[in-house]
Length: 188
Image (cartoon, rainbow, N blue to C red):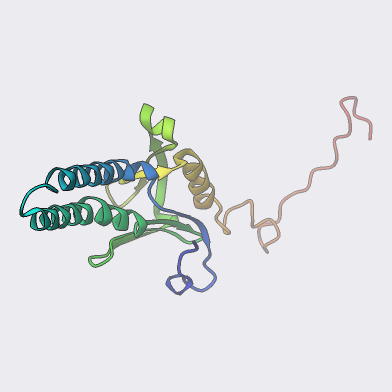
């Protein structure tokens, strides 16, 4: 899913758009299975009682509340968390009702590094840490393929159109062309 184009500047394009890694949803899915299992077990236990209908309604209501709070809310939070790298900036957005976000211009990023432990390496995610000259380091947890994201972000930060590699044809920045050296014996 592409990031909404109306949030981008003129000429800006999305290079990378990620949600947090799916490992963030392991506990909510486990809770979903456990709550459903307990609710079904409780409904079966109370079916022979004289007030079984009321007990089953209470069990169902408690199960729905727990699922909404412990599964649906984390799932929506995961789905609405965006880590976006564009040609101009890094954007991070979280939330549905209470949205928070940060934009970091690529020109302000001084270093990008990543960390991941054993479990993160097994599932393929990690923590991305960006440093700029003006702020404390920013950390972004559970970024999928964190090594590739770090490499891509490093390339985007260093792909400055005003650096020496891209200004070779610009006036005042002519580069000297060296003659072809030929083979090792000096022949052409």
